[in-house]
Image (cartoon, rainbow, N blue to C red; front, side, top):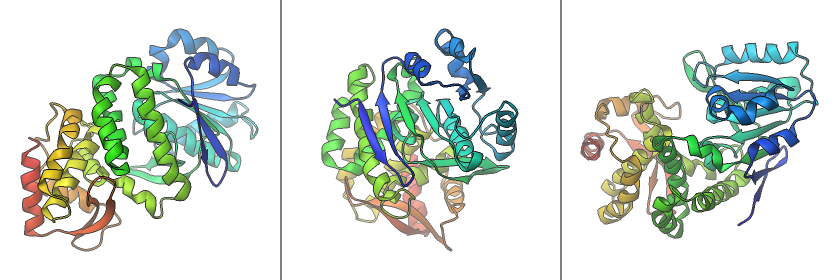
Amino acid sequence: MPDTLSIKSSKITYQVQFKDDFATTLAEHIQPGDHIVVDANILELYQDRIAPLLDSVQHTVINPSEDQKSYQAITSFIENLLETGFRKNNRLFAIGGGITQDIVAFTASIMFRGVNWIFYPTTLLAQCDSCIGSKTSINFGVYKNQLGGFYPPSEIIIDLSFLDTLSSLDLRSGMGEMLHYFLVSGEEDFQRICNEYDAAMKDKNVLRGLVFHSLDFKRGFAERDEFDQGPRNVFNYGHSFGHAIESITQYRIPHGIAVSFGMDIANGISAKLGLITEEERLRIRPILEKNWGDIRLDEVTVDNMLEALSKDKKNVGNQINVILTRGLGDMFKSPLDVTDDTRQWLSDILDTMK
């Protein structure tokens, strides 16, 4: 299995490298003037491997939260960079998950009109998905993910040993994101992840193969549609409903778990519309159900689901835009009229998740 994956963006061609010892690689990477941003939880968990490196380099430790990922919080981070002598030829290093990634990527994109940054993703969700594709998103006040752009790292280092300290829930969140890629890909990849799901939870080699394939599949779409203007829209499969579930539950349900529910809801609506058979929906459901496990959507109702979905700025009138499916490998964006039938369909589907 290859150790490297190259992704072409409009700015640079960057690489994902799979490494077995992130600390050694990081020590070799660091140059005078560089700045490390590290998740406080990761620093605590890997104190003996990271702390010695921080003694000789400027660094910032962040407690990953939505508040930290705000424009207001980032201004103090930028001020610190300027005060400590950070220059255009220096680089930012991000060690953490999605919040750390967004903070560093956004800052790198605006510092001196752009500086290089290197990412060490520490969650399965970041390793299998968000580390590539160039997107940056930060919050502005109460408005979530409303500022951002497209600014890829110059390099990504994936060390699966970071996953040793993840909870089962966080692992399943990452698996949920991978599931969505494998279903969008088609029948062969659907069968693969069904067959390898259990082994991947125990065997790093199996998991590594799924992560590599997930990134490789996403790469094809990111290179064709870097700025998310068309083909890449299918990756919102499960996400419109999933984001609504996250919002309603105040993020009690992690992203990839919410997306697992979201895919089943999308499949259920597709079956009600006659786009797929109910048998096909039920054939796909077991792997999604395995991933959400004993989590239930007790607080999710038709009313708050539709209210959350209606906040999407792309919607028009009494319609919501969602990704539906004609079957594995055939997802498409479609407006959905909110009618009495739609409400009943959603009610019936949600009842199976409580």
